[in-house]
Amino acid sequence: MPSSRNAALFDRAQAVIPGGVNSPVRAFRAVGGTPRFIHRAQGAYLFDVEGTRFIDYIGSWGPMILGHGHPAVLEAVVAAARDGLSFGAPTEREVELAEEILQLVPSMDQLRLVSSGTEAAMSALRLARGATGRKLIVKFEGCYHGHADALLVKAGSGLATFGHPTSAGVPEEVARHTVVLEYNNVEALEAAFALRGEQIACVMIEPICGNMNFVRASVPFMKRLRELCTEHGSLLVFDEVMTGFRVALGGAQSLYAALIPGFAPDISVFGKVIGGGMPLAAFGARRDVMRHLAPLGAVYQAGTLSGNPVATACGLATLREIRRPGFFEELSACTQALVTGLRTAAAEAGVPLAADSEGGMFGFFFAEALPQNYGQVMASDSARFNRFFHAMLARGVYLAPAMYEACFVSAAHSDQDLQASLEAARAALRC
Image (cartoon, rainbow, N blue to C red):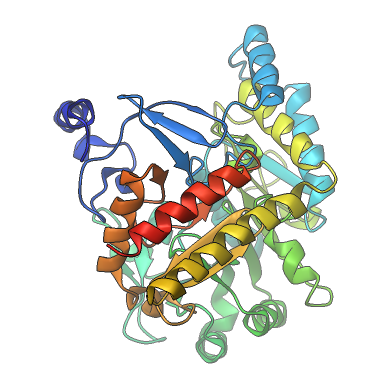
């Protein structure tokens, strides 16, 4: 049960903030109950306002790949803050961060720093439309690219119909330019391009979805997507806000490039890890695409806090730490050990559970097999997930408070943390 302090704070918050939270999933609406108000974090742990410690598998929804309060990151942030919090002018550090990212992602020649994943995805869409002179965009059901109007759209009744807004305040006139397809469905993809290929400015995709838990695009699906975009002159936009520098040092695109000869997206969107926990994101592409962006071209984008000196210090320190040889091998092994342990515990309890991971990102479903699309995710056992979530929380393990969200392991998680988590899972699976 939540403490009286958490409940009291939630009551106060609901009086002054819609739903009591500043991002909807934090409200625990999907799982029920009262959210925990976090006071501080250190390493692999969160501590709420009552001092209760939780093993943290949210990691601020991905950025905290080193864990909370890493000494090198803190040192860089404090030093940057002493020099100034914001200038509204260029700094050397933003150039250094851009160079660091471009070294790791060869599909991009240039990038633009912004302040959030939503801003980066929205700007990437505008760039794609400006570069191609086309209006239509394609996305996939279950992929989340932020809350820009054109991306809050669900599927129509068929390929020839317009999409429909999933949020009030999104005009039908905006939604009509977005086509929504089923993830991992090659036939639907081919049909959409056959019908409207010459109108499609871009296709935006999460290569590994983190907002329908953890669902990865199959290699045949991704290969065909790349072929169709090339054939029709459409730009392939990789949303790596969540997967970038989290599933591999070169992002998810490096995993597909290793399996598909010559594979590369046209535009890439990054966030979370590149900011190390501070508000920072980016979008980038080949030079011939980026030349359309102001002040060089006619596609306008700007931001007062873009390239913020404290955020860039945090992100640069984080990226330099994760470039250490063996970092991702160790992180992947830790994540795989946790996922394997969850599968084993579920099998021992006679509970259907499918799980998957890549790098420091993982997900699990109370289902017989890993889902391949949003419909299959929706068919998994949500009631059991809700029971499991609360049972784990009561045992000091903080998972994502919705079955549609991926989870994250950091370099700060120890073997003892994993064993404690699996011991809690064995008990929670009996609930």
